[in-house]
Length: 427
Image (cartoon, rainbow, N blue to C red; front, side, top):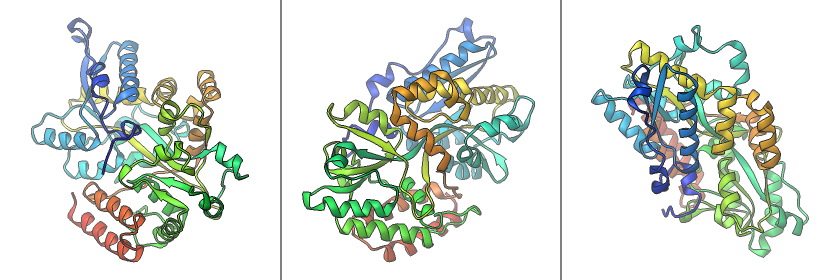
């Protein structure tokens, strides 16, 4: 599919090479680093997010004199994971890497990732107050098989974007439920306007919606349940409303954001990290807002995507402590708030939102308030060993359903079998 839309850079596809090259990698003179423990961070950030990460690293390096971090861009998440696997074979792993927590089971099975439980629980670890300050949706996925492996970094809940001009024109309100969206679709269809636009690659969103509709795609025992109540109900809802023309998938354009800003739908579901892109690239007269995801009956959830920081095997004790020191710094109150303001991702701590500087930021950027509020209903799906290989089957299956090439009854049982096979065979 074509990937030529202005929103592409925001979802970790490294298109802004010229700009990014100007700020990578971060280096220091020999006199600055000779007495420090030097560690490297491999990441997948581009554009403003890479600059925000570079600033965080610079701030950390200037804030203390024992550790020096060098941040190195390694391509998008897929490229980065491949390089980590290759580096594991050649014993050239960095100290830290930025990947989604869904990669943890496969990395752990290859003994490439370092458990950080002793560091988290140690004297320089996280206190009960720290854990209470982190949003629960993040702390839940810091662990795998009873060990801590990751800490949250760039995180973004799913939001409902809405066109204020169209809502006013048709005398409609921001929808509270999925049924409201369907009802609105019937009211605007005659003018060739959809109620809701959705992107291709809807895997993270679908997982959250399926859980809202009755059951997650993977349960807490790490067992796939792709053909359970939630995925069935969510699939039926979307397919039915796509057939009616109330919901429009992006198709070959991949992202529906352009069509949304052109007034082709009332609403649009995307990551909160799309806020900055829409602010930058939408027509100046485009009037829009953000709202929390619609509810199903009494349940309202927001799937959270993004990536985490993880530590790799083979480090000396000194480098492990140094890597942990930076990990802990990255999720400190002030660092997380500054990162959020610069990158567009949400802060990982509740106390960051309470800072005067962040309150002012939200006042100036009211659409970001919805992103912060959505963390209270945020969910991240657990994953299993073999998920990395399975994920493309999952994305393709949703695309097959939403393009009406296959029915949910054809797709979901097959998807469940593929998930079980992937889990059995590992990665």
